[in-house]
Length: 322
Ligand code: ADP
Ligand code: MG
Image (cartoon, rainbow, N blue to C red; front, side, top):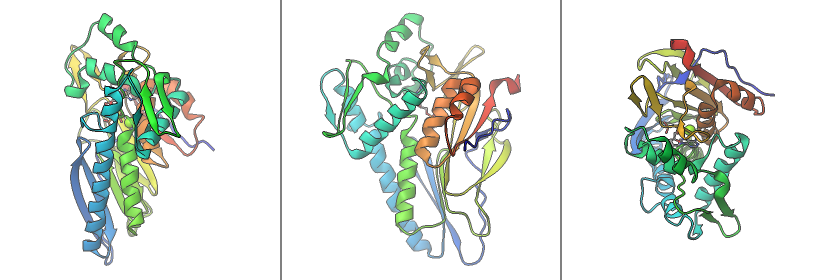
């Protein structure tokens, strides 16, 4: 059964009021690390703080491993290699990289190209890889759009290789890789015997188990136009949450707000909603869907959600603040 609610109000996940209860002998252990351009926080409830800290370190190592494979900001990453060899030759990649790219393609198929990791040349054109400052002209956008098409990613599963068919093509896993990294970090915690934890990579979250004395981890949903404002609190257990919004990476030009999520149909920043928050069984799905739905906007997004199971979505439409 589809489970979703789009009451036209709710929200953008906050960077988060995670309210911890410290009951009995279980202590909360919290550590953070700078990964994937964001602060990753891991909180564990456990009786043995030293053991918990050790597992957290292992999870951070895993996050770093994934970042080193998938980040376009790491020159040696597999993704950078794929981009470097675009139009030239196939590149042998790890199982992680192949998996994330295949998953990305499935969201492209699902959304008829609203989610498209070949968005790289447009991200560069708008300057979002460097903070984002300039509005490109129509000719530049048209030129970059010629390089954008997920169907020009060719994958050989047996050989574990990826090739971009055209020279100049660039993939950018910014809309999905953080979610995958969160899932991998949560898996390390789980394999390390941890039963109650929350992994939060700048709003891409996996909630493992439930905190002592509560039925789920409480996560604040933020008002996208008010840093302090929490509009709702939701409880999650063994689920992931991710938010795509126009309020963190953006620049303004006159009255126009340009966010870092590009609509592949126009080559321009998507602008139908202020934010969309997705609750899903895993963080890769929540992350990819949040980006996808941000591009599609509320109306087309609602239609897509109807095809999905075990997913809850909260749109924060633009019109609310007008
Ligand atoms: P955040 O990076 O803030 O967590 P998202 O998960 O929504 O936000 O990812 C935004 C990133 O996704 C952009 O910085 C860019 O790397 C990538 N991206 C932008 N537009 C698209 C798109 N249409 N399809 C897939 N990825 C995109
Ligand atoms: Mg995303």
